[in-house]
Length: 113
Length: 109
Image 1 (tube, chains in turn cyan, yellow):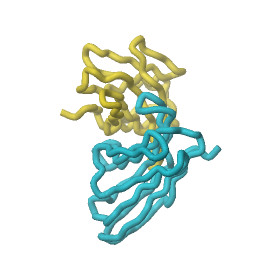
Image 2 (cartoon, rainbow over the protein chains, first blue to last red; image 1 turned 180 degrees about the horizontal axis):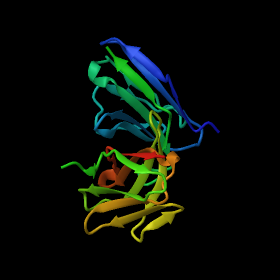
Image 3 (tube, each protein chain N blue to C red; image 1 turned 90 degrees about the horizontal axis):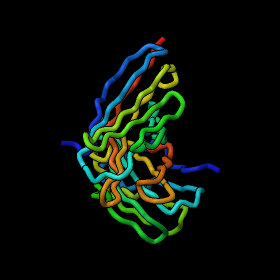
Image 4 (tube, chains in turn purple, cyan; image 1 turned 45 degrees about the vertical axis):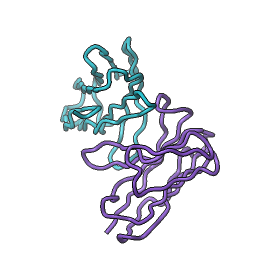
């Protein structure tokens, strides 16, 4: 049981490049979400999904896309990277919405030059 | 005013000390409350939920004061391994989970 896995662990991008951050979970959780963590700002919700085929925007969705074709996978796409997207990205899954324990992946550290 | 506010610390305490963290929240309709622990450069992990009646898990005690809208975490007999950042998390209206910025604890010999 791997829990929540994320790839890559680290990534350096140039401004304007696109990329996909991968997230997968093997706990059969319906709810998955993406957060970014920046110094002094706490974790902020980017996008979330309550089940396969359903996604919605969080607090800071601009510049990011998501899809949920299966229960297990929830990739995050950066359309055209900007230096403001330099951050640590965490994927999380849970049985339900925020009232349930959130299980986080190990994170992806992204640097946009 | 931030939705969830925490003293960022750091709190530097010797081993064996008792340390308390407080957290305040602005939405009086908030429903659930949690403390998560985050080690340096790692992901957050649930430490404990916070119930209205207060709850204890070993050396850790969490309290909720709805009238004053604050949550506390008490750590007794601190260990070196308790060194981490402690995140106050509030689940409120519109199914929104809000994270505080965290309080850093450093336990020293």
